[in-house]
Image (cartoon, rainbow, N blue to C red; front, side):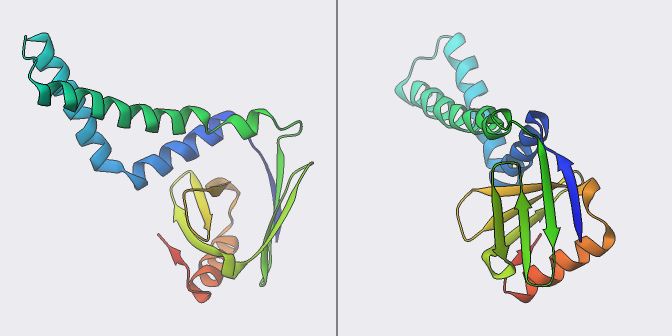
Length: 157
C-alpha cells in the first residue's frame, strides 16, 4: 500500500502542537498559570524571592516548549520537494522524499500516537517522530499499522 502527501510548515506545526499536548498537556497549563499568577503578583507589588523564582522558572519552561513548536517546521522549510511517499507492507514502513529514503521494520516503531488530524510514529525512544496526516490513511492502512506495531510489542494510543 502506498500514498503520497505534501509536507508543509503548517503540518509540522500541527504535529508539534499535538506532540506538546500529549507529552506535557496539563502540566504545561499549570506552568502557564504559574507564570500568569507570578506576573500578576509582581505587578501588584509582591517581590518575594519565590514569586520571582516562579516567574523565571516557569518562563524558562514555557520558552523551551515554544522553541520546540517554532523550530518544528525547520526540516520542512528546507525540503526542495514537499512530496513524501509512504509505503506500508507486512514487514516495513518506508518514508521517501526526493532526498532521503527511510525504511524501518515494524519492530523499530515503539509508539504510534493517533490524533484526528495526524498520526505520529516514534522509533525506539525519545521525542523524535515521523508524521502522517490522518486523511491519507485508509481503514486498511490504519488496521495494518495498528496490527503490525502492537504485534511487535509497540503501543498505539
